Length: 448
Ligand SMILES: Cc1cc2nc3c(=O)[nH]c(=O)nc-3n(C[C@H](O)[C@H](O)[C@H](O)COP(=O)(O)OP(=O)(O)OC[C@H]3O[C@@H](n4cnc5c(N)ncnc54)[C@H](O)[C@@H]3O)c2cc1C
Image (tube, rainbow, N blue to C red; front, side, top):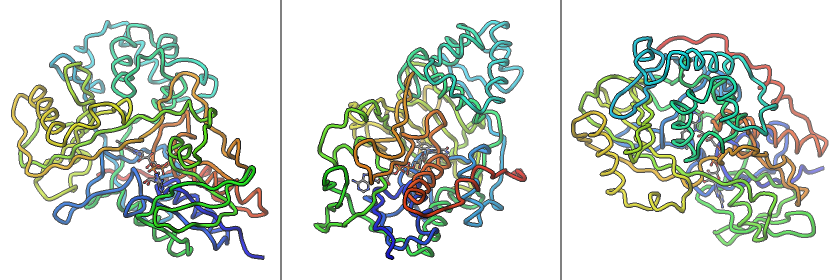
């Protein structure tokens, strides 16, 4: 009997992983439809003078099981190197490395609050299941385990940078899960000599080629044709149509709703933030050396500065300093998102001057606008279901479904695998991929 015709909407990591899961189980009529010229979505890259760069900063998290599993599967995990990075907090013209005892002591927060902050972080590092905090706010979490002083000094500025919201409107489960990943305190991974997201996307693309998944690049899904409670056809902007027995939707829920051309109040709560990101290459030396600087002063256009070569010294050409200056924008409808490249670059260079007291002189720049990055994880956020609530042959994957975990490459990959596995289970197939990811443990973390 022929296997079902599956159309996967979106060729980011979630869509790639869903297609791989199905094809690996022997389903041979799987097609990915991807709007962009290559697979990869938010984890894509761009090339300048023979070197590849991420669209914005990207690092490997040591607790991101889905990512580590796929890196091993494509044969790239052995190349990953780990580096302890320095994360700075820039506040009112001063910089603080909160992991450094001297900076920690001079940070404007009382000694009691500093001890409470340490207690909060240790508790979060050790806790992996955050479901009991799903209904509670980040303010509740920080105030209970740290204190209001810790919230006001550190976490209110951080949630404002991330979502433009104070802690009391952000999910406590999301903040706890995010701290559990230890992004600022554990070593972060990269692959020397290259941009690791390119290695990942190329490797998973090879897995798809080997498994004979059909891929339509530079092709947008325009609309979904429905009959009763099923999606039966996907109309493409090329004028073609793909008949579908089953569909995996990995496009943002706002896009999915547009494709259906009908209201879906059950998905209205998922609202996406956007990102404006600029990469600057310069021959200038920037000190102090840091990887990640949170710009907590309210006078900056940007939310953060990443010195990409402080994590991966081999990114770009030898001797280059490669900076990513970026802003989390509340929505792609925000005026800032639509500023010209020149205006954005001018704003970021002014931020740089304010922080480092000299003029940034890049020899190339690239501005990337990412319209739908991740949902705003407000207090009480609920993941839309894996099996679509209205159309029973549609399965859903993507980072709008991975709350409260962080929105990462690995959670995207794992979400795609989960959707593929559910589809197989409902139609007589099986896969061991979810269990393999669940069991996966990193054996070693060689230092860079
Ligand atoms: C600024 C930034 C920093 C990040 N940092 C890290 C990090 O340090 N570490 C980490 O692990 N992760 C990081 N991530 C997260 C990671 O990149 C994403 O979570 C992951 O790539 C999401 O994959 P996805 O497939 O779910 O979504 P997407 O990549 O958004 O995929 C959806 C795909 O659907 C396509 N699409 C949309 N509409 C249509 C249509 N109508 N027809 C066809 N195709 C369509 C899009 O082109 C896209 O390719 C970062 C992301 C950003 C933006």
